[in-house]
Image 1 (tube, rainbow, N blue to C red):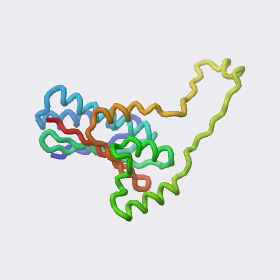
Image 2: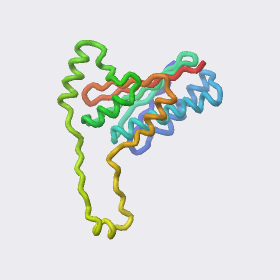
Image 3: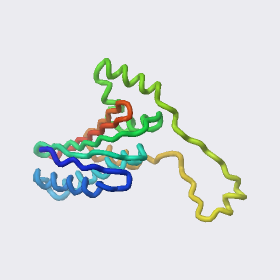
Image 4: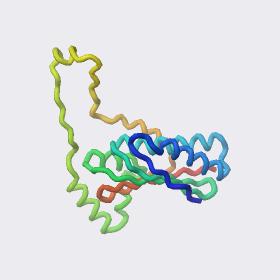
Length: 177
């Protein structure tokens, strides 16, 4: 069974609909209440991970299921740099870009890795005399904590990501016994 395709953006539009579609599909497939909650958490963490890493998001989300085996899919486009690429690939179960399954895929992936831009990071250190005067100053931590990745790895059976140019395809598998 394939669910409806839900469009999601970085303003949060579609996020609630994606979770509702996940619940509807899980109920239709006869999952128990705890299993439904687990599948919804997988969907939430999957979408949060994609948004945290890519920043912007114009994604399509859908589920496919057969019995109690589910695959959650998400596709999006992003401006790829080395940091995003590393964070996405390190989120997978195999720690590999799924596009590398063929010789041409390996060649393309190697070329894209070499051509990927370095992250646009510029750090300015404000003297403490100035930073003390700024009320409500928020200093962004340049390191992503990876919370979504660790939760998703704990819940999902398999996580695959295929990066081809600026397109990211993410597949998360979860099977209930």
